[in-house]
Structure formats: C-alpha cells, structure tokens
Length: 139
Image 1 (cartoon, rainbow, N blue to C red):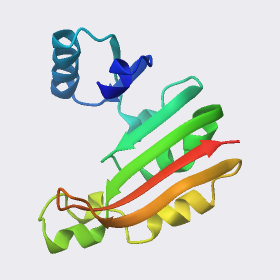
Image 2 (image 1 turned 30 degrees about the vertical axis):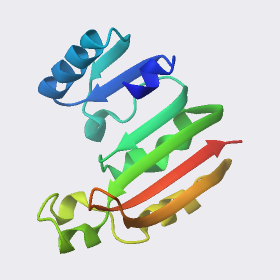
Image 3 (image 1 turned 90 degrees about the vertical axis):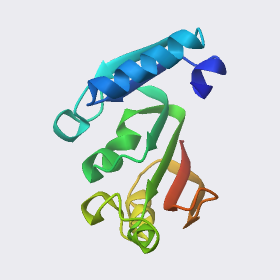
Image 4 (image 1 turned 180 degrees about the vertical axis):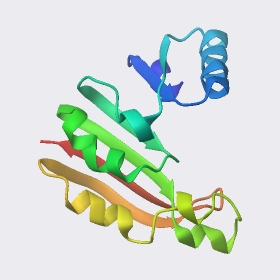
C-alpha cells in the first residue's frame, strides 16, 4: 500500500485468495489502485513482464530469487527481506524449510549479473526477527 500511495503502479501476487482479498480490501479502504494476481510462484515463477521494482517479503522460493534480475527493467530496483535459520532462536515459525541459511541470500545475490548491490545485511530486526535483506539495482 505504501508503494501505491507513493504513486507507483502496484501488482501484488499471492497464492492465497484470502491474502489477495485482504489486500484488495485495504486498497479500497485507502482508495489506492492495486492490481492483484493469484499466482503460485513456486510453480509458475514470476509473472510475465519487466518490472521497475520487485519486492519479495517473507517468501522463499530459491529459483524465484535467482531469476529476479531477469524480470527487472534497466535501472530497476529489487528488495528482498526474509528470515534466516537463526530466527529459530526466538521463534518456532516459520520452520526450517522456509528459512534461508545464514549467508545464503548473499550467495544468491553474488550470482546476479548486471546488478549493483546497494545494501546487503543480516541481523535482528526491531520486530525481533533475524532476517537477511538486500536492495539492488539493475545496471
């Protein structure tokens, strides 16, 4: 909603009809234009198109992360935030299958071609989650 409020054209994808319904309701309440696509990224990958900004928040499909630069416009920005296994020190969920290994996001990012890394970090968030985060721009 923040991106839409900032004037960007926003397309939100999720496999959950419930999540999409909640997003549409929030957008309607805030009178923001937000497109939604029901899509299983694990099976279908990213939606067709070249995007100016891609945000991946707490979603882990390694093949999708690997392919992010291929779906980004020149000068486009990618932002990723996802918990690591160290998060289990404080939280039972998400379980190990849904967590990055420590340093794993940095390894994935190192394989991206034509990308300028703006920031990459791992650590505890103010909300108490241990996350890996990256911001990168396509050259």
